[in-house]
Length: 152
Image (cartoon, rainbow, N blue to C red; front, side):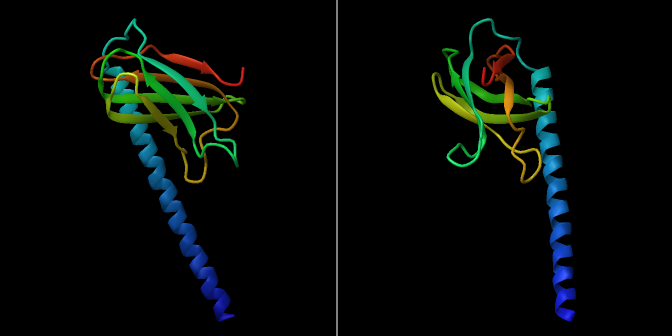
């Protein structure tokens, strides 16, 4: 009986630890998204010229990529500095997941992989993504808001 009580006590400790990790993770995501909001608000005016091309790959289980990934290619014709890719994924039911990817430098024609990580530990973004919206912000320029339709 004492052994079962000990196991129950340890499981309770693990559950409390898991709750704390989840709370910390939520705060980190909220801070990251607030940084993205401030960056877009204070960014350079939108560039009329193309800045980026993109392709999206969704994590769909075994034999797939580990994380939802937005592959971005710098087609601006110049090196960009302090680059942020602000992303928003939308699933079939309309649920959205926003994220932010940062790179200190982005060379012309280089591909960056913006990994769309989970909003909670153990959950990978949204499932069955139908739309990816993104904007690239840097010291030199800001891209237009782009809207990729997925699976159409």
